[in-house]
Image 1 (cartoon, one colour):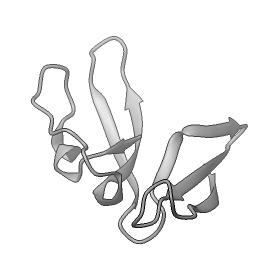
Image 2 (cartoon, helix red, strand yellow):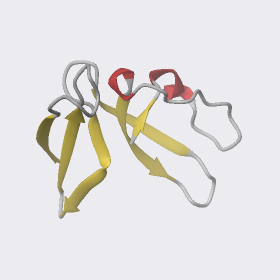
Image 3 (cartoon, one colour):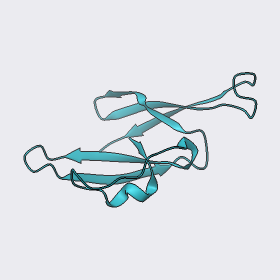
Image 4 (cartoon, one colour):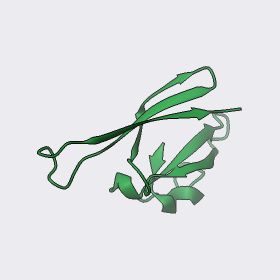
Length: 92
C-alpha cells in the first residue's frame, strides 16, 4: 500500500495517521494484519520519489510474484503524454 512516510509508526487501530496527499512523496509498505489483536506490522518496500508512483491497487499477485504499474502525468495534466512503468516484486 502507498502511504505517507510519517505513518510508519502507526501500528494499531485508533492511532492518528497523516493523509497521503501526494503519491510522488509516498512510500510503499507491505502490511501484515493480526485479526485477533488488530496489530499491524509494516515493512518498507520502496519510495515513490525516484520514479513513477506505483499504483499498487492495480497490481496482481500470482503465487509469490506481485506485478504492478506506475504512472506519472506530465506538467500539463491530461494534455501531456503519461509515463507508464511496469514492475515485478518477488516475495520469498
